Amino acid sequence: AQSVTQPDIHITVSEGASLELRCNYSYGATPYLFWYVQSPGQGLQLLLKYFSGDTLVQGIKGFEAEFKRSQSSFNLRKPSVHWSDAAEYFCAVGADGATNKLIFGTGTLLAVQP
Amino acid sequence: DGGITQSPKYLFRKEGQNVTLSCEQNLNHDAMYWYRQDPGQGLRLIYYSQIVNDFQKGDIAEGYSVSREKKESFPLTVTSAQKNPTAFYLCASSIIGVRTEAFFGQGTRLTVV
Image 1 (spheres, each protein chain N blue to C red):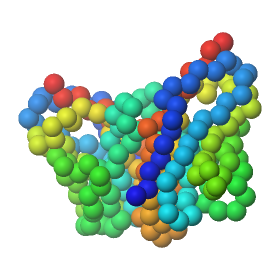
Image 2: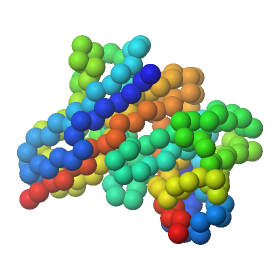
Image 3: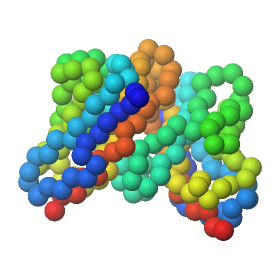
């Protein structure tokens, strides 16, 4: 069965520091992968997605993610964090190409300190 | 602007009452989904629908019901059979048949007292 693991429940970084959020997935075929961001009390906004091709994908707000098949990982990175990046981040894998259901990780809550 | 509208944003109900959450989309998407979000558990799929008048159970359908009478609308009813209904509920939609992302509404926070 497909699954997504986000091993870090909570991360704190200093403003201006680099960021990497980890995501590992379990999927039998070629996965399609997403990172979403959620501000408190709000819906989810898509940051980036990977379907095929170049394993380094660029997203909005300066985020990027790298798909590593050998490690079953899709880690999210940002070279310099801004205070407005404080939010919860969810990694998701597409469970079925026809229906586009998503399986989500449990999320990583990012705090940014001055 | 196209998007997904969930209403109300906050909802309070007494235990034992059924309550219906609204979800409307004007993106012309065929598929719609309901997810439940609890702290530390991510999002879990309740129900989904790929076409009008048809829907399938997700991972945690017990105590919930849905309908899909119009392409644009996918209301969720939380029944009295749902043992722990207090949660944040998110509606989403997508096209089907090709790999693509889902678009989410702003959510409804349901509190049952």
